[in-house]
Length: 307
Image (cartoon, rainbow, N blue to C red; front, side):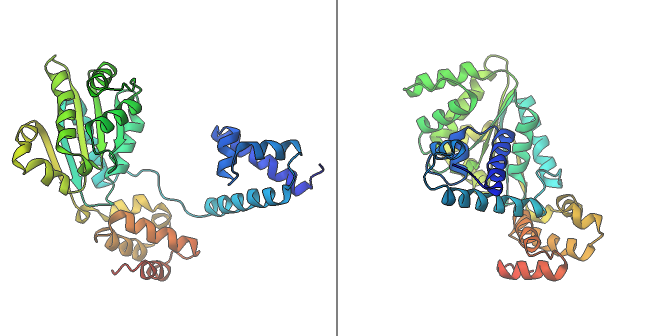
């Protein structure tokens, strides 16, 4: 089947995108919205029966990607006041071993700090988000085993042993969204740290979450043993976000000395919307090609954020 030059260009674009991201043909096909990678294969061979609809999907996909690339994007990581402190706290937890709790308002940079630490220390740190589905010790252990590359055994005791064998002295295990952990799961995590401590070694367990995590882990009577083993507890609030943090997160505003816009986003960041809300407002304003103060106000009003 003969293709137009536009269609050939789209196939080249698919090829370049697939290679640059390391996707398999099946993965690339799913990204484009095809039911299977075989459609993309047939399209490349010129044997697909309805290529017009397939090329429309490809064109639509890259239109969205191209539009996104033209927008100002969120800074991957900025060493803000809070994120820098949490990053350092995880490092202390790694060196000292035992349990550490870092909690704070939603959207202030806790997760960014944890992910950055793991990114910078891939060989001796592990990062796992605790979602509400991990409601049993076995489900938690399976998730940890999968994350650290341990064998996922069938029984709980074999899972525990498999994980212990894979973990090593001087490692830190970072558990994000820790408020979703149950008491039995926290006791199990503590047992890993105790195991290494009994051998004169260190394994840090860093719990990161919303304020209820500390309330849950520190005040209930059944958490006495756990609370006694917590070396550090730190609380963070959106009020600790500074003007300098905003400048780091939105360099385009700092470069253009847009002080009023920076102050407006700072007010949002110090509200319950926190940094996440400020980023959302800025990106929405930028998508409207107007991140001036007026544009930011329109975006904030649309998101029903009062400043």
